Length: 518
Image (cartoon, rainbow, N blue to C red; front, side):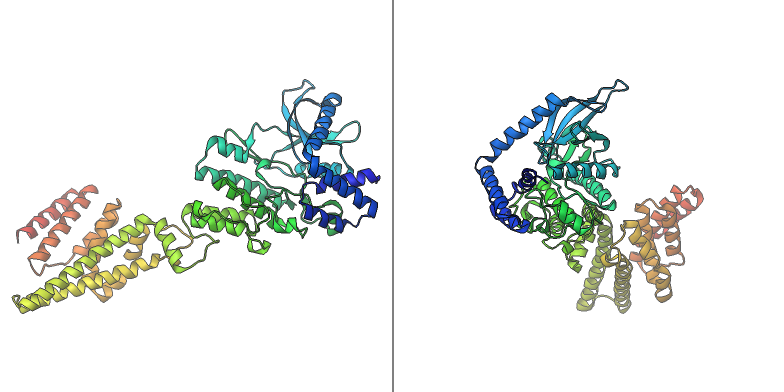
């Protein structure tokens, strides 16, 4: 390799690093004294005048392409639409007259080196093996007359990820939906043993319709690429601010590096800010985020690769858990946390259960107060006192039954499924047989209570059967119990009417009226 080409390749890879990182990398390269001096001088000149010089050189190269390369294969170059660290992208149209189509053609930026040409050829090969709705598709490719590789991708009319967020101000749900598409795309690449290594918002295009397209696999590598090949072809090219700690330090890169970059991108997408590129792990804006979201981001951006999500699928699964109100894997699984998530996820079911228990508890309290007044006043007869004690014991048994039944749907027992009001009632109904054997009177009370609750859910047949069994063989001991039975018979009459059982409904209504008259 000629010396100038050799130094140009090193310069291209080092110019984006800090001074300390540049010197450390040059030490690692083991250059001779002359090459080292010249490379340091080039980098110093770049720091002093670098941006204008590089812009002028690249602009000249782009003008050269436009003036000397107007057509590539079946495509006619129209105008430059983008430029990155390695390539310049042109809008092109099909010029052979067979059909109309527009594509984005990528050519090497500036004056290409052997390494940059190798990387573009590798990007082309990688894209050829990927077929995913959220990855820009490779449509064509070839080489210019002077041997420079090019590739043609589908043309996406849209804006970068953060620009799209600024223009459209999507909701949290919409931002997470965009990120889902990014996770799906990276998951597809990882399944094909490809690490992107340059994930950042600028490499994600979003159409006005919200379709996400992942771009630029220019520094991607195969997971099973040998270490020797990796060392020969992968000097430290990365985007500061999004690169993982191991990538910045020149350590072995795995799919966990992409997970880190995705975490940084999600943090920026949700909060609009990104912390210092040199901080690992970055400070998560806890005050601006839900605690679970902050935990998810902290796990994705953990300093150690082994502490991050094992893959894009696990990352997305935790985001799904967050949206469903379920416990996320990034959180500490304490009983209090699980209970809080359970209640938040099943407000209606828990509310119904608590309401039923509160009704019974209030009934217990009222009967206990009545018993105390009876004892203090000594105004009630011995039989009335015994009846009060019997009712209180019955109510306490009812409360215990409901507590035991609903514990079957506790947070620890339902981590993997949704629990509804119907689930809670079914859990209680399944325990009636056992209660019938121990305390038939309490069992009949619970049958009537559950019948009312099932009726509220629209389950008229189940409610009818429960009310029928709960009323069978019941004789009121006093006027208060007769009034309660009258109310239950009225409910039973309504249920029978709903089921078109007219004669039985009329009979139940007559029974209700008879008990009210006593």
